[in-house]
Image 1 (tube, one colour):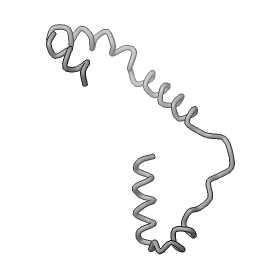
Image 2 (cartoon, rainbow, N blue to C red; image 1 turned 90 degrees about the horizontal axis):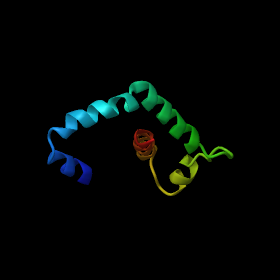
Image 3 (cartoon, rainbow, N blue to C red; image 1 turned 90 degrees about the vertical axis):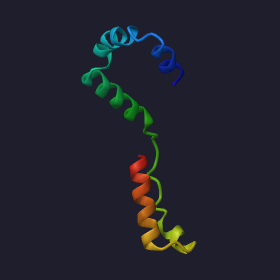
Length: 76
């Protein structure tokens, strides 16, 4: 945010900066970078256990668990 505020003080700079930056953040490069981030975010090890049985024992309803799963899927 600070960088944007600073650049806003130099309106002629922004188009030139974007023109210089654009080739470096083209779709192919962005996709390659995203692939690297995803690859490096995988932690090797056994699959995580299903939390549903424990949540049910703690009083969660199937509906609440489904809402939680949807929320977690959106975050991941």
